Image (cartoon, rainbow, N blue to C red):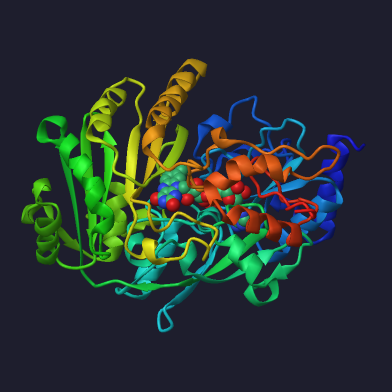
Length: 505
Ligand code: FDA
């Protein structure tokens, strides 16, 4: 068995022989290794001294570099973890739980071209682009085109589209992954494939089956969607003494049935519920809808702001529409923090008494927050098997438990993690069941992690089913069948990658 040094050396030599310039290769001995490793890390939980680090970082500058990383990695026993925006909640794009794993990070940040064809309402986006860069480029090309994806502008296109991707346009246009019409991918043999050459099964799997499992997607062809020149936003905050408990209880029954041009999400934090809306139209019509469906919230004209769609992207990211659009291009984003997130899908309104007791969780000093994103609209009319993302009709909303902190050390870590886990446990009777489902892009290793099959160097399907059916329900088996077809040796592997379906199944 070759030592780590031999494997790293052979891998690096192979890359250079394949034409990757040495300046794009960093090892722990290189002066800029740490800065590059940290460049897009969001979650400080995975940059502790004990976290197993990559033996090299390949900063791909062109598709051939990614192909070389896969080919050389396979040849020399070095796994490749693709990293686009680095936002994985469990650090899977740059850290491993297994100290014995030899892996390199294939950093795609430089592959971030966004080319918009406004006449055809299409765009090609490199995986290394951020959502903010995509939104900015689309809006620069047209005032009436948009792309439906997540709220945080520093999230990477590569991981986000691989896992679904939802944001303020989802009730009108579905997920980001629902609006992908082609892709370029490096497969486990290092070949460059597009939709035609990869075939419809693999193309299905990469649009929601989670990052890493099937290959490295280098770029995505997006279907852009129509938005009016003027949209309306509002944010209204109600405290417990302003009936927040009643409003929240009521919101659950209303939000997924609102007209699909309107999304009304809620952030529940401290002792208040903050209602945030985007309406694809003018304030006067939005107020008509609010009066008809949710008069108790008491939204009035001064709450409304009429702005362009791109300003609404700034508004939701930075809570102000007057900040410069160029903030969407800032890849460094907010201050780094420690993060633990968990998620649920809610299918029946949670009873009022449960919300009543939730406030005591939210007033704890170690409390995080809850983010409630309503479904319905277009999300309810797409078949649960159209893409690997199965959470469509019948889901009222997605609930994210989001805990974050800045203090170092195990005491803070344990308190914050227990907060998220404790509240999640309390909610169990009131959320989806058999299985209790979650959203793969809100990666949560508490749901289970992969193990290898006995006497076989591939991930166990039987064990992976435990977490896999929570993210993908009935689509998990099809994902495993695609994996068996395109990567039977299980080269693309991480703690929650899709295992190959065993032949006997
Ligand atoms: P990252 O680079 O960490 O990759 C995530 C996973 O995909 C890893 O397993 C990685 O190996 C793999 N991967 C990355 N690039 C790949 C590629 N090119 N080909 C194949 N596999 C690849 N979600 C949402 O739906 N709506 C939202 O509003 C938000 N908001 C949000 C805010 C913040 C602050 C965070 C930290 C996260 C979110 N998310 C979200 C979740 C987000 O969608 C999720 O973490 C994405 O996977 C992040 O994609 P990145 O490319 O940034 O991650």
